Length: 352
Picture 1 (cartoon, rainbow, N blue to C red):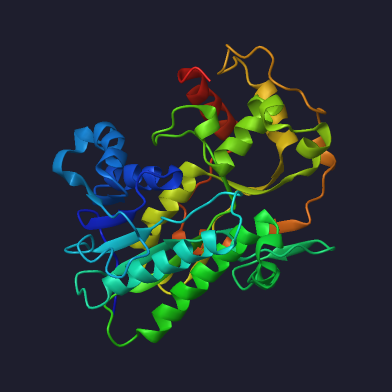
Picture 2 (picture 1 turned 135 degrees about the vertical axis):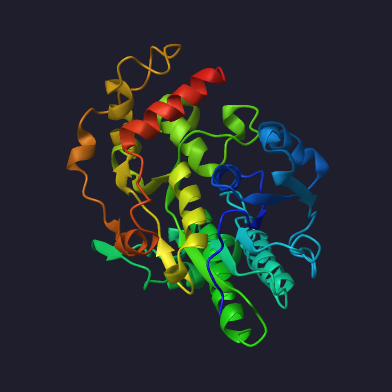
């Protein structure tokens, strides 16, 4: 039976130069693991080698140009004891749904195929999303790991006419389903078990290579365009007081990836990782209440409609108690104030 992956083990992190992945790499290294990170080119790995230089040979990169190709990860998985698969496209710019679905599904299958018959591998952790859990309903609902987003899978049958949100959500749902199907079908020739983590919106400071606010990923960019510069994101008062969802600090989802390696009972489980619900007005109010301000260069932080978030009743609520029970007391979520302060301080340091 697969077992716990202790510190000192070598872990493969796919898409290591991504927002969440870079924090997963950092947290693994801080906890005593050795890390091999996949990047699409040598150039993509330069920044990572720089920021993790103090770990010496405990950190290395390997180029996987196309994660969807058969055998793409065959070399990368050699000699590792666990895999953290984070690589998957996340944007709202796809024309055809398959632009997101194919790399998400095929990339997941590819890395799991490469992990077959590798006796050193004890556990594979896949980064999914609450996009694979939620459905848009007229009534309020508390979602758990038992829920699946069949709604978006149905909508993308419209092809290009499907909404951008549904295209992304379908890609995450189908990729996760592919992971579980592969896991069940390969029961006789694998040495590892599977854990899937499902975070909602991910916010917090960045450590991966980003040149400007316009180059931020979808979640972090949306936060910047709502809390710091709504004029850049075209955000209206109505939008920041009614649009939100579940959220988690990037450092907490990274820690969850590490704890998922260490907890025996996490094997074979789907875990929803969420701090709670929000509308952007909540973060705006928090930013304006910070004293001293961590971003003094911005004396014009947006005010929105102060306090309006308190009146908002979210229709989508996530129950993350299962993850807290399995991953244990080590998983302590950052507060909204901590996330806001640290994110703004990071933006200030970058001159944004």
